Image (tube, rainbow, N blue to C red):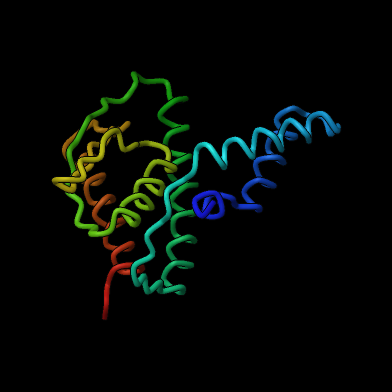
Length: 169
């Protein structure tokens, strides 16, 4: 019974039920009951692993600043990708690159991967945990400067997350 108590997350059950009702597009007793049953099955039979919280000292001011800069970069990247798609020219050259990562925490590496993948123009296609490397796909790799710019963007993202979550000073 100990395992079930740790698996059951009431707010997650409510969230999954709500998502089911929204997915079905109609608020009815049947949809709520089906969503609740499905949510209970998911929570009890497919539990998420516990997130290790090992002395993360979050620098909240830097995290808020990171979020604002990330949103600005999202708008800029969206405009660039839109221009690449709509411009009257051939599609840009793309590239697959391997980039080293210095993040020591897998949780922070996960956050970095999410932040990078949510930006248009590039995506992480593979994570090598043993060697701490990302394999990334870059949409616009027209010249060596564009490739270096993307590598620099990854390094900047990494530095920001180290500064927010991992630096001890």
